[in-house]
Image 1: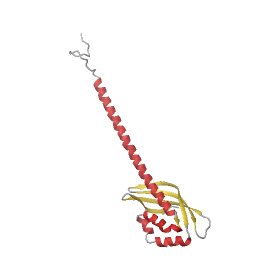
Image 2 (image 1 turned 90 degrees about the horizontal axis):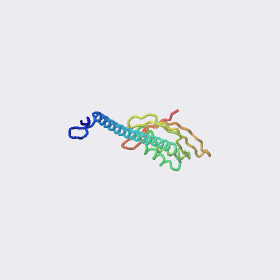
Image 3 (image 1 turned 120 degrees about the horizontal axis):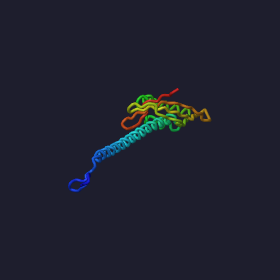
Image 4 (image 1 turned 90 degrees about the vertical axis):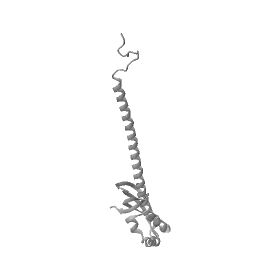
Length: 174
């Protein structure tokens, strides 16, 4: 009498439960691979978003530093640096007025050195990101021997224009 698991040629036949187990294992492996790929793609997306946000935040910080760091000896270059990083309403506020502004700074012997105390993203809207930036500027002029601190809170909107992150709006926040 032949064993039930052997065929007439004498080779072993697979038990009937092995086929569903093999299919289940294959489905499980495919699901695990798909989940892994999805997690990698999702993680990369998060990293890309974080890098983008950090770039916008750094541009907002730099705008505030450019705005709060102006020296009478280098006022022309300081204002030009500010304009080079500006666009839209913010640039329109300064264009054409930079000459008189530089003249006042130079005549009064104004020197300000700014620092960013804290900054964070407030809103994101397509190619533009609005950030809140707290800063302190040490301000002195020809009639003042010691620099005095001035604290500012600003809302800075940075927009991507052809791959350049530029300040399009700066507002003082009470």
